[in-house]
Amino acid sequence: MTRVAILAAAIFALLVIFSCQQLPRNEEAPLYAFPGPVRNAPKVRMVVRQNAQAVTVAVDGPFKLHDGRGVEIPNTNVRLARAAITFKDRCLTIANWPLRPNDQDLDRLRISPEKPGSLEVEGSLFPGELELIGDKKNSTLHAVVRLDLEEYVCGAVAGEVPVETWHEEALKAQAVASRTYALYYSLRNAEALWDFGMSGREAQQYRPGIFRNPRINLAVNLTAGEVLTWNNMVFPAWFHSSCGGHTADAAEVFTRQKIEALAGVECPWCRRVPDNKYAAWRRDIPFQTIVARIERDAETNLGSPLRPLVRPLIKPGHLRSLEVAATSPDGRITRFLARGPGAPGSAELVANDVRLAIGPSELPSTKCRMTAGTRCHFEGAGWGHGVGLCQWGTQGQALEGRGYQQILATYYPTSRIVKLTYGPPISQRAASPR
Image (cartoon, rainbow, N blue to C red; front, side, top):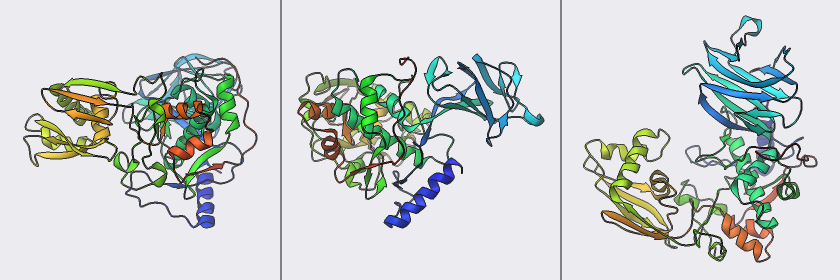
């Protein structure tokens, strides 16, 4: 069975068992039925290069090639040593070898190393196998790594938190949140070309490499298969660096749907950890810098939520003012009001979208107070969007003796930890991370 067919069958079975219904299609964060028993750890697809003119690939040892339908392509190469793969004339080409099996141009190719951990893409090691997808419209290609969910979680934990210095229980909590987040987007994007990227708005920070770090392995193996559900549904287990004292309700940041597991909760722990430099901060940003960043985001970022709201305001000229329109009970700005010379003249903007447009380094969090002027003054606490698990709060709780299950129950209220019932965790192999 294909990946999509397996997931579809699992979802249908759980829908029958639990009589759960997906949220309406127009919601920004639809939920998905827990997949139930699976034979092996699910595979996830992470895009590591998009719209590239060329992708440099190396495989240390033998490998197999398959086309987009899974048919094996005869391969006489013993090794693939840093070859540039391109897509031109509607055909994928390895070095100077156009791939035309049966005299047909090939626009999708899967490279499957026989030795685990021997795949290198643009100088970085990755577990799993690589799929190359040609874009006929732009004559570019996408590089997508397909890897075991548990292997992915190792790289996500390594990329998201300081592994060597954080408490074991904090690492385990991060592993469960990262696994849930990855599974959610794997289900959500099952029909797309990939599930998520290595970074960005819908991605975790992933560190390439094959991990033999005992602290990562312990956290991942001791929680192997564990994911969070709410009402027997997989939800996007968002997390962030530091909430500043109270996490945000996802309904105010990401989705109109009220999800109890993503409601805002009090969090005193992140402000108690001495190393958290974002426990409190101040910023002074010139108003014209803020205007320029918002206008640039609306004009150039096709996927920006600000684009349809801000563009009508700036066509005749520049934004004239930015004011606080709404705050949450704990003091987090949830909406800004932008005014411009065009019709309709003003628009309410989600505060986190404005934060990302201005730049996270310039405006670390929306849990702040704003004083407007030629230079806008911000005083606040925290780093990130504020929804879900607070990473510095997780470390704070762990240092106070709380276990990862207690930590997760704090940040994802009314959620449950359930276990994907596949076999023993795969031991991590090969070299240190690059």
